[in-house]
Length: 233
Ligand code: AP5
Ligand code: MG
Image 1 (cartoon, protein in one colour):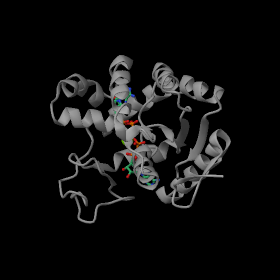
Image 2: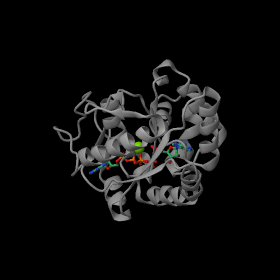
Image 3: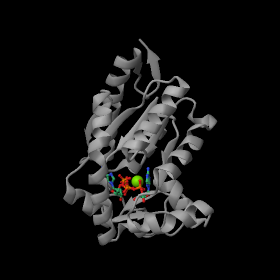
């Protein structure tokens, strides 16, 4: 099963992708996390990406497509994957679609998570992240058990460089510029599903599982059982 999470900065793609990944036992592939890890580790990719990511710009399609092509060819993606942050442009969507066609697999479903702008801004301004294991927190909505410390690995959690107010504005602008053509691409193929993400993560997850179940039933005749595993009907 191939799932593509779309949605503006702060929509909850990272939070929901993690829940879906646990539920469906599929790898969560976040291009933002891959880039931030590369920046922290000062790899060649990280050095190239740093200024662009931290100012809210978009990396070139060429870099992102080759990064995703390599990642999706790994054996853990054979049963499918959950993409978070890719595709972000029409060219990236076309490239993904070509990769799927070349492998002879059914196209992934694009799930658009959305919430009102003021909710996005408040989520991003209160977000904290773990630089070691990438866990996500929010100072009010999802605080760690011990203030400032990651529950999972004990590292000190930090504010993302691109969560400063001026950079958030730039990221939202870039999103608006690209999203129309991306939506059209998936709508034309009847692959775009809308899910309201302005509710508790567990409720968003439940609604997505229902959407997936309905879409997969149409696409393949398979259905999900209650633990999120596919079964044939
Ligand atoms: P990326 O990391 O993908 O950032 P983004 O798309 O801006 O999205 P965010 O990660 O900010 O938001 P999210 O939707 O994941 O929200 P989250 O779950 O964290 O990309 C970063 C940068 O990398 C880009 O700007 C670009 O430079 C580059 N890049 C990446 N991919 C690229 C590509 N394909 N092409 C070119 N460049 C690329 O949630 C946010 C907060 O809200 C958290 O604090 C969370 O705890 C809280 N929260 C989430 N859900 C809920 C909920 N349901 N209820 C209450 N609180 C919630
Ligand atoms: Mg994210």
